[in-house]
Structure formats: C-alpha cells, structure tokens
Length: 232
Image (cartoon, rainbow, N blue to C red; front, side, top):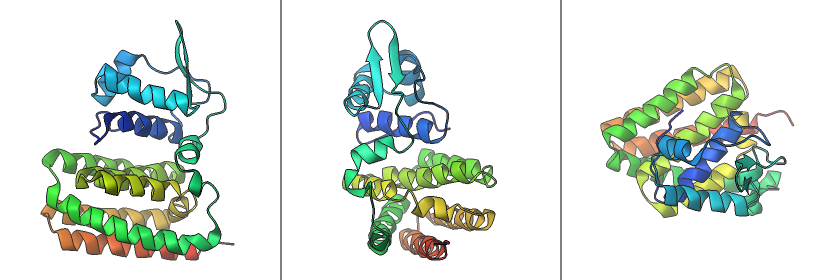
C-alpha cells in the first residue's frame, strides 16, 4: 500500500485512504480506527488536515467519533458507501448510459495521461510503478486488482495536477462499479489491463505526452470492448 499521499486537497487524501482501506477489506464495519498519530504518520499530513477529513467522513455517516474511545467505522458502512454518498447521481447508473461514461472517460483520461507525462516527477513514477507491481501480484484476485486499477488512474489524475480533472475523474470512477470489475473479471482481462497500464506508464516515464494519451485511448477502448462482451 502507498502510505504517504499528496493531494491538491489534503483532506481529500483522508477520504481516498479510507475508501482504499474499506474497498481492500483491511477495515470492516464497526472496526476501531488507528489513532490520529498513526493516521498522520501514514498519510504524511498535519493534525488539522486529518481532523478536517475525519469531520467530513463523520458528516457523511462513514465514521462515528466517540469521545474518550476514538473513531470507529459505522456498522452500516460498505465499500460503496463513500461513492454513493459523494456521487449520488451515479448510484443507479442506467445500462444505456455506459456509452456516455466511456466517451467521457476517454476524453478526460487521455487529457490526464497527456498532462501526467508532462509533469511527472521521479517520486510520481515510483508511486505508479509500485501500484503496477502490486497489481501484477494480484492477477489471481479480481477484486483486489480492480481496486489497484482504479488507484492507478487516480494516481495519474493527481500527477496531472489539475483539480478540475481530478473531481470529474473521481465521479467517473465512482460510476464504474460494474465497468472496472468487468475489466478485471477474468485472468485474461486482468493481464490485458496490466499490459495496457505498463504501456501508459512507459510513455509517461519517457515524458511523451501524445503517446501517453494514445496508449490511454487504446486502454479505454479495450475496457469498453470487455464491458460489451459481459454476459447479460
């Protein structure tokens, strides 16, 4: 897991981290959360930013803060909870809207890949490489691979450095509860996605913005084809 995070909004880092821990199964409903000191160290953020993020999660009904006892995940929290609360417009995405989703993702993600290639740092490349390493180790675990798939795309969004790219990207990924898992449904589709991600990262490493955008477009096209072939 990538423990230290950088975000345009550091309180968003807290929400992203909670989402990853819930989706990855590390935290379960009702679990007591690590102390503030531990969370601050893991995320590399100040107490103020951590508490801002925790306050947002509490307001969303994801955690409950008990004076003198600490913070706990709510008993009703599920992996979908953050997406459904933050992205209610997508909580019941119609089948026919996936074409619109794919088109929007292609436009957004190619722009993100282009900017990421132009602005990446050595630390950014190390982060992306680690995500792909973990994904390669999860080829036999579809749900885990799907989480890492989304994490790779979100990391590119952060590297691109435009918050107005990151927000829509978060919305699109939130709508992909069927789209991304379908792309991770079989060992073959996971291997294909892994190769696509490697090509994207290679272009980003080279700083070739147009090649990175083209590699991302091919990846989105493949994802769309995988979804179209899913059993109905």
